[in-house]
Amino acid sequence: YETAEGSFTVEETAEEPSVEIVLTAAAENPAAEDEPALLAADSTTSGTCGDNLTWTLTDDGTLTISGTGSMTDYSYDGAPWHSERLSIENLIIESGVTSIGNNAFYNCTNLASVTIPEGVTSIGEYAFYSCAFSSITIPQSMTGIGIYAFYYCGSLTSATIPESVTCIGKAAFAGCSALESIAVAEGNSIYHSAGNCIIETETKTLIAGCKNSEIPADG
Image (cartoon, rainbow, N blue to C red):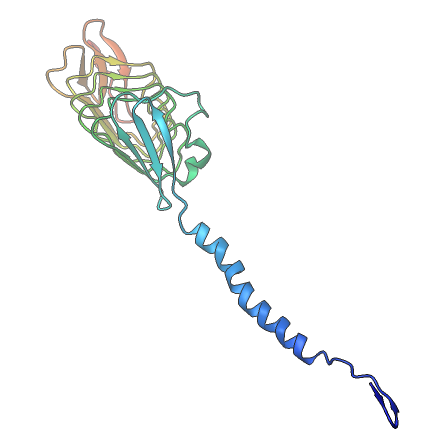
């Protein structure tokens, strides 16, 4: 500016811009920090595991299989939830499912609770390899249990095979080191139990035993 006494320059102070910068940062930062937290709040994962079956794994460790029909057979690491297997603690198979696929819950070492409904007719090979449940109820609709189905289920203490089962695969209960009792329900046309052993009646072949087994001399 020019005056009678000379010229001078008015410079803007940094005070007002600095206030604006602080206010802008305060308005934006909470939103940026909150966004990841909101995204992490719902960690449900889901997908398909058969032509008409879906699965959902929630953040409390519950895996639910829903729909109708048979489950897909998988390779040992092929199940769609395999990468999350260590977080699976509870398994709920809902009515409508008719089979449990090969290797479906392979090495789910924290799986401690399993619900299998009536209507499921088969358990695939290695289906529950190295799981952590201490007991399991096999439904009356079951007809086949695959090879190594419960292999190395080290916490399993008892097992009862229903009279409907007509096929038990090789080593279905092998490596179940805590297994104290194993039996076949009366009326089974293929197997019977004696001395905590499962025996194929016609051939007198020992199919499965436990740590308290006494193998009968005459089958």
